[in-house]
Image (tube, rainbow, N blue to C red; front, side, top):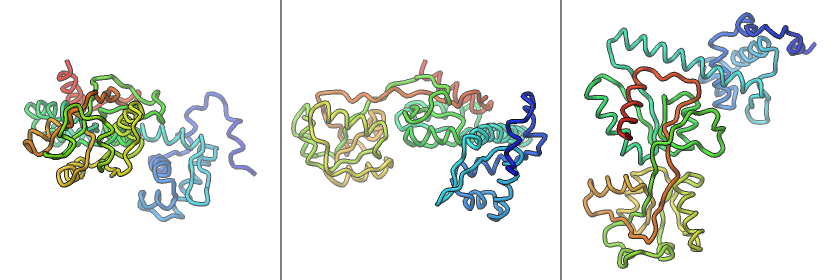
Amino acid sequence: MDRYAGATNRPPNSYDSLLRGGLKLSHLRMIVALDEHGSVSAAAQTMNMSQPAASRKIAEMETIAAAKLIERLPRGVRLTAYGLALARRARSILLELREADREISDLRAGTGGTVYIGAVTAPAIDLAVPAIHEVRELHPRLEINIQVETSNVLARELLASRHDFIISRIPEDLNPRLFESRVIGIEKACLIVRRGHPVLSVNDVPLQDTTSYDWVLQPPGSLLRRTIEQHFIRHDVPLPDRILNTSSLLLTLVMVAQSDAIAAVSIEVARFIRQVLGGAIEVVPLAFEIEVQPYSLITTRNRTLSPAAQLLRDAILRRIR
């Protein structure tokens, strides 16, 4: 007999059937681990249990939910629509429990709390760092964790409940209904080279004069990368042949400083680099501006920020005003 056969025969108002069926926190952690790793063995390792024990845990969940939650593939597993729905809700529940535990621990220890944020490079320099200084003056024991990455990475980290909020963009391949966002700034980019680079011999450098050099760009698909590529297409100039793909700002600077490579960075980053390195790095004078898509302050929908995260968010918004 199919153990899922009773799924459609339940009374329409039995919304608490998962709890009455015995769904536990370990089940919620398991479904999230399966969604993140796509493998029973990897999920078992995350849960610190054997693979047979993980398989039994999955069978328990499917019995309680009266639905098939995973599909076994030749390599790994994939969540069904039922599994995805449960994983999405499980993340929210586990996140709220983590927040409750964090706030209770902060109160017990008398500390100021912990904040996890992510930001793309320009607002990280221009908004997040000054806001952190401001908040730290009033709350010196506040613990702040910041990840600087591309929007594609940050949005997925936010959905995985690893950040309280991010300053970024919502990637085109993610459902915007999952987020609450507020546009807070427009990023402009520029090209940088080492001091004495041959391309600096003229003003208003034509884009075609740059294609013979090595380039350092963010990975394919990232917003800044797409913006630079669109400028080449718009000016009817072939894309550079020699490109080093990296999201590391440090590696980008090393390549630019030690070779004739050209790199695209935000104006804020270029300004900071010139302050730190003096004239070692120069901005290429172009006849046009490189304007990147506006960035937003983003949270997941229907999520309440902790008091500590709200403090930092408010400080960032004050800098915008």
